[in-house]
Image: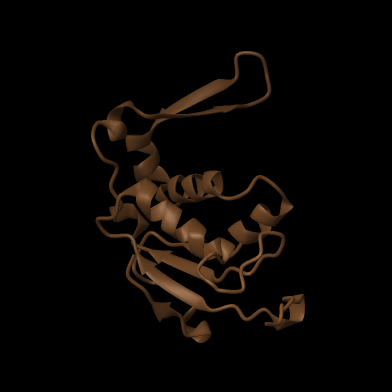
Length: 142
């Protein structure tokens, strides 16, 4: 047997399109993170970015199970004293549904420079239209 070493120039990236209608946030985000990392490829190595591009459409129709929509909160701090802000996920899903998915996927990626590179390959859109027709994305069901 021969061990093959993947080089940056040998990496072939595909484009996938995924519909988020009726999907549960956490389970859906883990599948997307799996594709972004390239774990679905037989040539996967954890020190290289071998993942593919993922286009997610209809993010506004994604679901959160249980009472998470009304009880789960997103916190962020402005950096100033007393600058802690909180927003309920119900409002956040109405205002920025793409942010909710990106935040969930980001939490499932490794915490390093490579993850920031992987996250740039995630394209999120609220409606069913996207500007990536030229890349000829393959439709996959998750």
